[in-house]
Image (cartoon, rainbow, N blue to C red):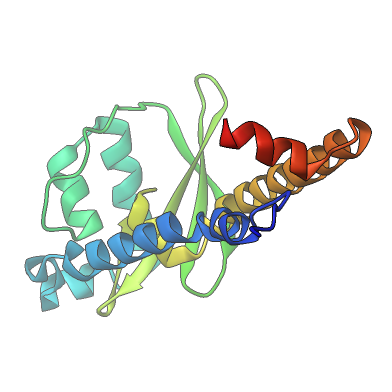
Amino acid sequence: MKRFRLVDWQRMLLLALSPFLPMVIILVVGLVIGTFQYDTAYFTENYVQRYQTPASLLEELEQVIQQGNTPKAAELQGIRWSPRIITPIPELQFSILWSDDGKYQDYLYIDASNNHRHVFHLKMVNGRYVWTPESLYYYVDSGRWVRTFFPILAIWWIVLFLYVVTRWVYHALTGFKPEIVNQRNKK
């Protein structure tokens, strides 16, 4: 006789582990983007000398954002494809080094016209500093994807747990009888 199960544990285990598949895909895509992202033309001796320190890059970064100079942004980022269009912020002012995690240095800028804060990320790549915008590559490379993924994973597991508990409680309160359910399924 086939045993009736209140919860199919194989399916529940599959559902519990299912968020890891998109996570792995996102991590692999982010790392692949990173391997092809930088253009070697922006890592010649001239560029390495010019952007050897964060200060030299930050001075030009401030001007690029104030003017909305997209071609110059590609040089500061060192990337092989054109960056997104930059909206000019004429009253952007440097504020402070926000954080340094060893891999990325985050600098805080303030728009003096409306007091909006803007954080720009710098990273040392092949002997020079580059400006890394917030993109899939940045979130994967910096490890900041963890701050998004694990709360979503925790919520997902809580929902699955509540589903199982709710199903058990429902069947306990309604006087669950598997033989009745099996007879209904045969009809």
